[in-house]
Amino acid sequence: MSLKERDKKHLWHPLRQHHLNPESIAITKAKDCILTDEDGNEYIDAISSWYTCMYGHCNDYIVEATYRQMQQLDHVMFSDFTHEPAVKLSEELIKILPHNQNKIYFNDNGSTAVEAGIKMALQYYFNKGEKRTLFMAFENGFHGDTFGAMSVSGLSVYNGPFEDFLIDVKRIPTPDGKNHHEILKILETFTSNYKIAGFIYEPLIQGAAGMKTHDAKGLNKILDFFKSHDILTIADEVMTGFGKTGKYFASDYIETKPDIMCFSKALTAGLLPMAITSCTQDIYKGFLSDNVGDGFFHCHTYSANPVACATAIAGIELLTSKEIQSNIKRIEKSHELFRMKVNHHSNVKSTRHLGVIFALDLNIAMARYGDLRDKLLKFFMDRGVFLRPLGNTIYIQVPYVISEEQLQKVYKVIEEALEIV
Ligand SMILES: *Cc1c(COP(=O)(O)O)cnc(C)c1O
Image (cartoon, rainbow, N blue to C red):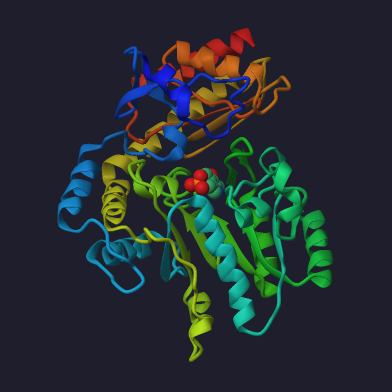
């Protein structure tokens, strides 16, 4: 029996209505930018397996660093112990993070990195004797699937059955270069009526919303507003972190830096699951006292897994290399040319690009998960490219190691799709 058939017996896939859509594609191998399925078909991984494998699949340098660590120290609890990979990773991260970040806290995935950020903000004020109960966030943001992360997310497809159980959140529109007076007015109203603990945002690009970009200056004004009202800001860089936007972090484009930051996905280069919540010294100091309970009692069993830390260190070594940095610039240039080419196509509503991220919206209405979207995905797969439309948005987020020839093939199948939609 094929893998595809055996899969159906016991497995339950995420983001899937199995009744309508029981089929999975069985992948048996991945190397660099190519996925191979059980029938030997090859696909260019044009979305880096959900924005993770930015240095290519099974990257030899990263695999070797990971394997070396596996032979030295596999795992040890991080509540009583420490180890070289965690210490070294913290040192390497602090070198590239925005200058105000000073403490590194480990989690297992993007959602729990956000969850920890939300809990840090709540306890920071609690420790000061203040009760703050409300969070603010952008409309259509996505921050993960645990309860806190789900609460601050504004995409309703994921939240429906759980809405009665979420923490209190007020939303504002993303800045578009023209609406900042309107946004500041909303902020004034909320801050005078509620005790707000924090504002969480995906800086510059909202990934799950469809790679929607917003205005950096406008975001800066919003962050300044929260700073001046003593409300913590949390940058969710789970998607944007580690080079995707053309800088190490999207927050590098913005003058005002967040108090707390969340990372995962490319942090461990698509090899192992791990996440980090970083924060300023001021936040950390808010948890220091003679009272044990003022500490941060939030923990996951596999915190700071040494093997995952070794993987992350190798990833940062590649990210900061000349070769990867010049690849990112090359991809950005190619995106720019492709964008000019398709921008005026009659089936294209709008286009945008930043770093290795490119997106276009089709001129048609499409459900996020539905027939049309499934057909489009199949169209790309039949032509050897893995692209995963988000509603009517087709986006590219390629590994930094993609060749120019592979990238041109990705563009070509998108152009072919534009002719038939
Ligand atoms: C993917 C994502 C998350 C959730 O991360 P998981 O590892 O899937 O839990 C949170 N925030 C953003 C911006 C993301 O893109």
